[in-house]
Every structure is written in C-alpha cells, then in structure tokens.
Amino acid sequence: MTHPYLKWCSLEFMSDPVAPRPTGSWGSGMVTAIGVPPPKPPPPGAPPTGPGPDGPRRRRRQLMLFGGLAAAILAVGLTVILVLALSGGGDSLGRRADKPTDVRPPLAQACPAPTVVPSEAPTPPAAPPVPGPRTVDDHAGISYRAYGAPWQRWDEVWRAGTLRVQYRVGQHFITENYPGGQYHASILSAAVPAADNDAVTLDLQCVGRQVVSDVRAEYYPQPNTLDRLRDELTTLGGRPAWVSEFRLHFQEPGLSATDELSAVAVIDVGRPAAAVLYVSIPGTHRQFDHVVDEVLASVRPV
Image (cartoon, rainbow, N blue to C red; front, side, top):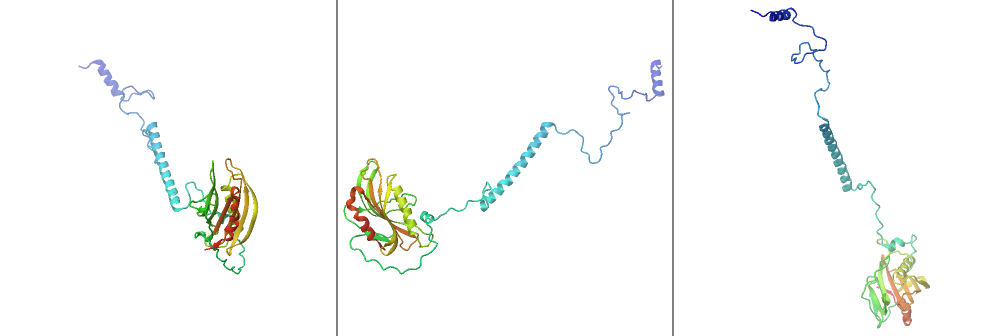
C-alpha cells in the first residue's frame, strides 16, 4: 500500500518532468550540467587559456633569458676585440696605434744632416805625426798627445746629460777634494752618433754647440757664466772640425775653483759617429792652461 504523499510526489514528477527554475538560480549540490549552456570553442590560433605560471616564476624565466642573451653578446664582443688586438688592427679602446717614435740618436734629431751637401773639395794632406806619447781612442777614431805626472790614465766612464756622451778614454788628475766630491782636470774623448744611418755628412757647428751645452749643464756648478774665447769651423789633423774654447765662472760651497778653461772639439772622422774631445783645466791650476791648445793641435785620425 502506497503512502498518499509519496503517490502525490510521483504524480507531480511524472506530470512535470522538468520543473521551471528561476533564471540563473542553481541549487546547491548540483552535479550535472543539464540546463548549462555549452562553452564556446576558442577561435583558431588563439593561445590556450589554461592557468599560466605564477609571477615569481615568470620573472625568474625572464631574468634567465636576459642573462643568457647578455652573456652571448659579451662573448661575441670580447672575441672581436681579441681578434683585432692580435691582428694589429686596433686596441681595446678603439684608438689608433701611436706613430713610431723617433729612434734616431739625440744629436741626429737635434742636428739633421745639411740639406745642401758641400761640393767635393780636395782632401787636405795628412798632418805630420806628432812625436811623443799618444792617447789612442780607436772607438772615436782619433789620437792625441799624452802627458806624464800628475796626469794619469782615465779609468772611469762619464755618461751624463741629454746626449749621454760616454767619455771612456783619456787622462785626468784630481785637483781638489771638497764636500761635493772630487774635482778634476781632464783630457777625454768619445764617439757620439751624429748622423742618420750610414750618412757621414755632419752639421759640425750644430753638433758642437749641442755638446757644449750638454757639458756646461752636467759637469759644472749651476748657475754659471761663459766667456767665449774661440768658436769656429776648422780642421784638426786634416779632418773637418768645430772647436769651441771658453772659460766658465761659477760658485760651489766648499769648492776652491771658481772658474775653468775648457774646450770642446767635434771632429768629422768619416763615420756616422763624430769624435768628441773635451779638455778642462780648473782655475786653481792655470799652469796647465797650455794643455788645451797643445792637445787640440795634436789631434790625428786613426
């Protein structure tokens, strides 16, 4: 026997299988899609609409991508710079390579060979030999008179000044000791490169004045004054030469000498290097002043 209420519910269900519901109203616990409009398909080529990576993960991926791209650009740039550096095409800063420095000797830079070569003149006859002891400087290409005591053989190397003339051969004696060191009378010779490459034409006057300036600046107290006694182109031992003879005046604490008679001769010996002869007699020993002219007159090529 059926309960009247159940029978009524059965009849109600059978008479109205789909009961109308208010639009947009869905009961809780519904698990079917009956009555729900089907979803529209995405247009062709549209990206999927599923859930993407969250914000932090997306930023990490972007940073990794940008970092890899920057590393690749840096590697390419370094490779290009290295190739240019090894091939000599430039430096890492893109600057042009510096021009080669002037490698000529200082005197050749200061005194280039004359642009007008003097006409060939007959070679003067060789000067007669000078009797007596001689100092021979094969490197410079000259010889000159040697003296006995108090003069002694020179056994040092003076190499000062801009020109770095190396006086290795000659004679000297110490005239006094003072707080600054020792003071010398000297007869010294050297060879100094004064021409370009294999050229043998020298501007003797220019070279000579450069050597005098070097001697005056490096071997005497500063400041000093100069009395010029001789300054001329001449010949020594039959070779072209420029001779400067002068007296310097100076003051140095503790030094008795206040002046000195000096001479510088630059001799063309037919080589790219000129021969230099330097003679100095301190004022405290004027009895040896005659040595200056005697040594100059005794010069001979070797």
